[in-house]
Image 1 (cartoon, rainbow over the protein chains, first blue to last red):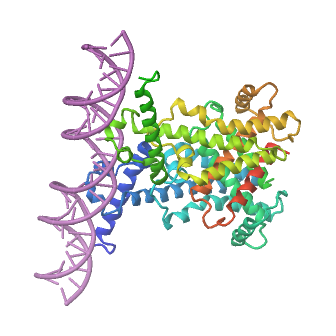
Image 2 (cartoon, rainbow over the protein chains, first blue to last red; image 1 turned 30 degrees about the vertical axis):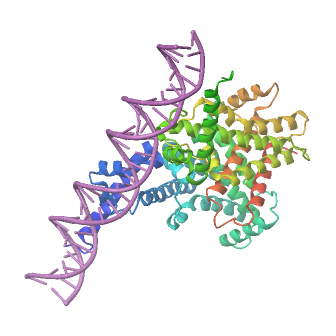
Image 3 (cartoon, rainbow over the protein chains, first blue to last red; image 1 turned 180 degrees about the vertical axis):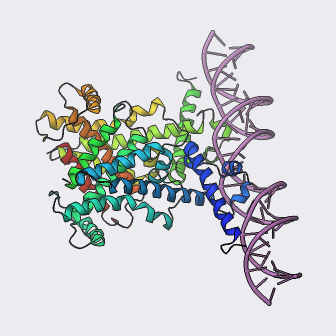
Length: 227
Length: 227
DNA sequence: CGAAAAGCAAGAGCGGTGCTCTCGTTATGG
DNA sequence: CCATAACGAGAGCACCGCTCTTGCTTTTCG
């Protein structure tokens, strides 16, 4: 009847419902969720799910993309808020990412944990995956444009050239050092959150993990040279 | 016959063989290796494996402990070599850990990747897990004892007290800041290697990852205050 | 309009998994 | 020497991912 076609709309709704149920299972079973169990919860035969996702890995890929988008949106919202300087903006962004990770550790593990064995990240995921690092880079670039970035160690050697190539994507005259520092800060962010989530803080920092996280991120900001 | 008992010795050998085969499977299948497949390779019924390991998770735990021991031993060997100052010792240690991880990414993922869902790290693993961070702490403490550590940001608040408690385990008068910095450096090390191994460097630093890694670790050393 | 085409859901089935239980055998220690 | 405990193998249970076939419904097009 409708121009869009009933079938297409129903298909889209069905796809969303499967993903929603799968996301729920992800929260309890992690990456080894069972496609059959998801199908049961949705109320259809397991074979019918294959009309919507070519394989279990394809379903996981859809969840991965959604997770990247979710954490990216959260980080963007935090970075958009008014902040007292670029260092504070970076800290706010970091806390937003950490809060998101704490709220749903399995989603975090899905995108930043060890890759699912036998699973190769398809092209669809590399776009959404870069949102957070681009945000950090934007903060760093903004600070640099306003001339507020302190000096720091210069990269040298072959990797410095690679950093320069990446820097060229952001604009002219962006020093490779800033790109390197931004990437390093990004990996520190991911690493600090993963360490906390994966239990590496047990028996050392148990009460005030948020404070210790901020301590680490302040170090990262200093390394970049943020004011 | 023998005092030790034939059975006990055979049992120990059998346990080792199962672990060896499982380690081989780990290199190809990752953490979702199949106990049945391991049993087939060993040449026994899958049910017989349960005489040696109570469950598949128990087998994985054994592999985890071995992996922690292996990376710990590697790091210790690197840290024991003569070095040109404590910063260089830290760098050597870092490179050793990275080299080990590159040589066997699945073992790395097993211990530093996302925890296997439904798998709770047993007590047996927390001892071996602390070897590397203790090594870093030892380097930092040695530098501190010789009065060569530069000043740095002071931790404040509740987590600072927790760091002080950890510091007390190392000896009197160890500043909490050093413990925090050492832990931060440790997480940077883990995070940088995981980022490289889990594909986060694709399309940015592809040629000289070793150089970029050293750039990051130099930053960590500076944050600690190593000379 | 009506037939052909395409999309869809369900069921059966294949080979695989972790794990348990039983049963015959073999080494161990009182 | 013999009861006991450890052992290996096999059958079996419930589950898994995935495929194929079979009917049915919607869409598309001559």
